[in-house]
Image (tube, rainbow, N blue to C red; front, side):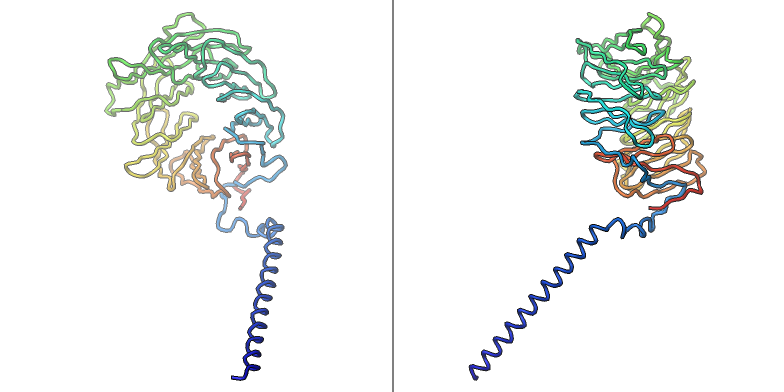
Length: 408
């Protein structure tokens, strides 16, 4: 073959290769510019399409008003509602906010393991396994108390501002002390050979209901007491052993107490595998419901309890709703699992992975499913909204009437 023709073919191939490279560079450059423009204007571009296939029924929609989302410099342990506003607790700070998300108070607490207890606008903050606790009124810290000897195991605040603190005095003794609003001592009871699990105030905060566990011949016993904090008598008004369920056909096992909640003439005592309902006046067991599976979460309302249970044998998570006598009203399987439940008025809510379920406490009505725009770790009802907790921020989901429908 003529060498000139060979050279022409080689030159032609080089030109084609150069053209291909040039085209690839142009396409890549245009693509990069388009991606940059898309990133810069993503919120405007996507806005018209938000909500497709995710209708929020019942007037629930995300709030984008001033103040939300609320962000903190680091992680948030928990969010809890006040009568007026809400509280955020971080590993180092306590923050108090108005309902609109504006901050009205912040303080560095310096507690190693901070825990909150709230009633109305009164806030108890204590250091679990530490020696300090402090009281707030929703606006500022009222006082801080330090105990030099005993470590704090549990704390609870009453509606009148009284505070119950459970201390570990030594390996065999727990001590329950009740203080007035300004931290003045009022009552103490010693529990020798018993571990106090939970407490709740009753009868205008003059009485207190206490659950505890002890061991007799190697067997665990669960005791619930009603104590009169205005009396020096540590024996109390009544005492009930939950391990003795004679008269009930249900046999409850694994009775480690998880919660005590007093509502009027009823005392709800939730254990790891059963719900007991006691009469506040005499301690008589009015109802008992035993459930299978691991307890995930729980909530209490007006004469109603909601329990989330993970039944490993059936491979399902269920929401159990029970009445003031521990009778089962509803059992609903939560597909995909759930982490938290709460009761607000006549509604029970459940938080799952990227979704919330809402059930009317009228068992005849079906539930509502609301797809969230991302995963959240915790939620709480706060006046006219639901606050959703992320790693370092809180977002607000509005509650409205049926005419105020929104989409996302």
